[in-house]
Length: 289
Length: 166
Ligand SMILES: Cc1cc2nc3c(=O)[nH]c(=O)nc-3n(C[C@H](O)[C@H](O)[C@H](O)COP(=O)(O)OP(=O)(O)OC[C@H]3O[C@@H](n4cnc5c(N)ncnc54)[C@H](O)[C@@H]3O)c2cc1C
Ligand code: FES
Ligand code: FES
Image (cartoon, rainbow over all chains, first blue to last red; front, side, top):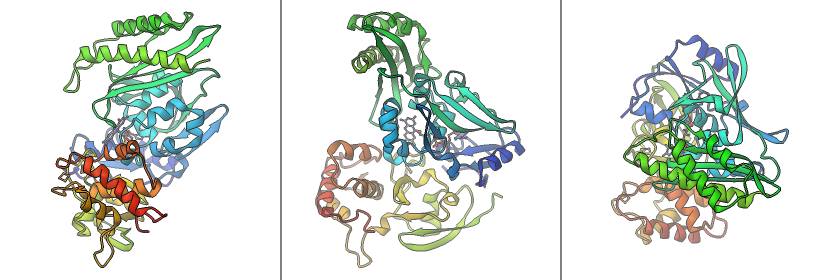
């Protein structure tokens, strides 16, 4: 199908883009980034905005910078740039591992990190990375800038804390503390497809015991979920396969009924979450010191 | 304004211009306005890959980009691969020799995706090739002959030749 008519503006600066959005009525205007999620919706007429505000060309939002020990990433940075960045490979291995699981090079060439965060697909990799890494999302709006923690940013299925006239400008990813092991795993029907389910795990070892464990699963709920109950079971314990098995089982018991669709039943997703958590914990522990 | 506006871009090395409404995709602009119908359209939501073209050297879905967004860009389509005298590009030759196509509907997209791959990675591994081929759908070949075509094209292009012929 072809999109319904809309107007198009490509503002020359972030400030101009915010002003344009603020002047438009609610639901009238839509931000266009890489278009890899929005264009399909327009083509199928599932989205019918009156105005597209194209921010994909804003060079001021396209950067990967060291910020303290972490990275500050402009919202219009493409996944391809993140995939090919030595800085990301070296400093953010979990983010890098997640990036190459997103679609295909042909999609990563245009899709942006900001677009994925704003889209908030429950099966998408980046929101899970943001939660696991305790990232902050920097947002610019008519009233200036605000900084939102990942746990407050993703609200539910395709919904974030962004207000209509706000633009996500930067994603701040803190450094993984020294010695932290990590894992990022997913199961997809075909390489490059959205995950049926996935898990991101980080943990440290302190005197031979697990510490600061973070477990995030995605594809199983209305958004990526951090599961405290499973984390608490692991912290303070010696890293054994029995412990990781119990943590996976605990997680699968406490998450709400997962989505059931043509790709997988709720039961299958629940079981994937269990197995991926168990394997993710083991992998993270093997990388921890 | 939702009305058509003038869009200029370089396509296969030549300066081109035409009219595009904001909602016109790059794929439809190339096919309808510039009459370059080698770029095919299938799913129109990014999945099948037949509409893949090079934008400033990068393989992208032309169904997921607006023509107005490509104003000023450098676009390469399948028509830009062969020499003006009709001599096929080495990637095309490899497809012919290795039976990389049957009906051919998917082929323009595969060729352009492979162009970018071989340009950035002249001797890719099976895994690296599959990462790219995974983003293109073919209903006929079963992909193995396409995989062979890519290896064969890489060998033909060996010695530092540019995959896009540029
Ligand atoms: C074939 C295919 C396979 C894919 N596979 C995967 C996959 O495996 N995993 C995955 O996670 N994704 C996948 N995607 C989606 C892809 O990653 C998209 O790029 C991403 O979801 C959206 O990013 P974008 O830059 O393209 O944003 P757009 O499509 O331009 O925008 C998406 C939404 O976010 C809003 N938005 C964008 N940028 C901002 C901003 N800075 N501030 C506020 N709002 C903003 C837009 O208004 C829109 O509502 C796939 C897409 C395709 C076509
Ligand atoms: S038509 Fe563009 S990907 Fe299918
Ligand atoms: S050759 Fe027929 S779809 Fe690929």
